[in-house]
Length: 381
Image (tube, rainbow, N blue to C red; front, side):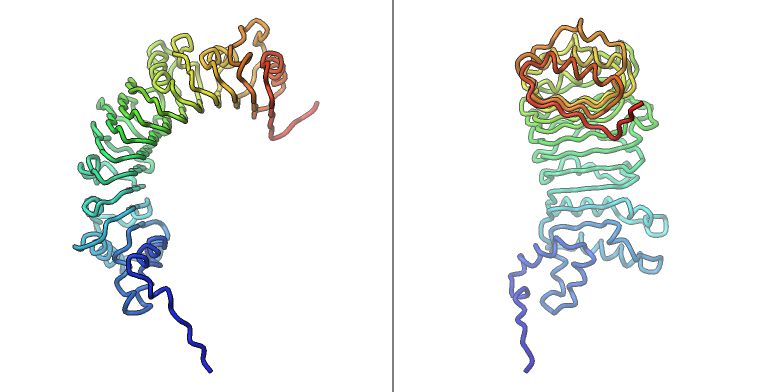
């Protein structure tokens, strides 16, 4: 006797089925249309549309136009449900040539018209395709832009009333035209500005940020022409990676950047020169965790101790840099945090002079509870 298997999934309401399909790659979601009449057009109502390398695999010159028409119909047809996420990855660029000419700007506008909450674009020619309305859209909660090794002209003003996450990555930002990156978004919680340490362009821009509710801030580049940061009272974590010329102007500008995040609780700092002056810094009253990565400059130990004078309540210190000989540790004034608050130290770069800094902290950190030293290899001669 043949066993009858009940199809319980197909009995679910359409909104639940569409929600399930939204977790599948677009290819797999479309393939469900052959299951039955009920499933035939369900994929057209999914709330997450992502075109990545997998969805682009198998395309040929013969079917690429069919793919283009499919995307046009999927995004632009009337009476569609609102979108949670729309994502385009760089693989789509290889097919967008003069023979096919994808309407990517139109696709973005269609997603915006459907009230999309998250847009993630990893494309190599953002400057030519980003509609102006993208930076004034009220529905967006997350916006991620990655120019994939190219540069694009950032709009002078960004005003997105409900935006909580903004991620901008551009390996070749900057040109001869002076510009302002102006972020006026009180709702913003996470902001990543990653320009890959300047790429090959002239760093001819200033950064203005008015985001009083920011919780996470990441910035990677050479020192810009200027920084104006509003008070970030809610800032929990910041990752700052900067390099620049050892000049008075560079030091002053970098100092303004660091002063703008003085309320942060956890800071990861990567620098290759002493490019901001500790004597001009405010006190970091809230900072309890500090990770310092120094790149190729002498005097980093002295600079580090000077910086520790600005972090009165520090509890955790993580260091990753090559210690050099010659630092007169005994003559350095002991920072307040070493005597009263520092409980944990982790040193993750080992060399022959590491013992000098270890002895200093063991001697001066009066309530130290944990010291961790990690290394790849240890050679004894």
